Length: 144
Image (cartoon, rainbow, N blue to C red; front, side):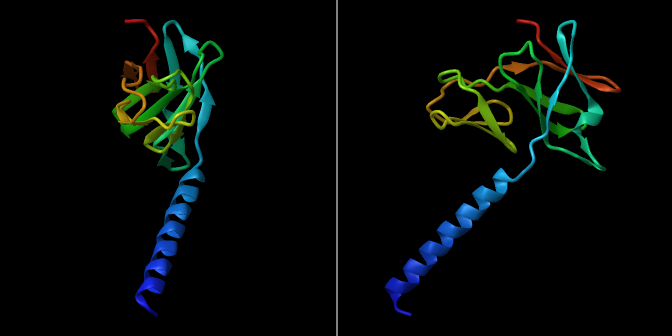
């Protein structure tokens, strides 16, 4: 095989591997649930993070009173973050891909703490205070 053919073959192999990785990431099941609002809190049962014996990394929670869903990422049994799935660029709904949130409208990306990873968005996502009880994860919806 000559040099030109080798580079061409390696290029196709890299493209193929990248495409497969993206497709497999899209196959990750997103757990989306509807939860009640009690008082000023969204109430998520801690068991909602369980899938069999294993804890899921994140949940998408919704309630009919919310304009956009909320992404709850589980860092550990005692550390969670809750982020509003509304892009700070032009207000479109974000999609969750593991620990990354993506705006399909203009390509903005955010990490699991709401920080901008890639623009055009410049502001972090709205986050909500999280309180953990024995049975529940309470997401405070109070305006600051």
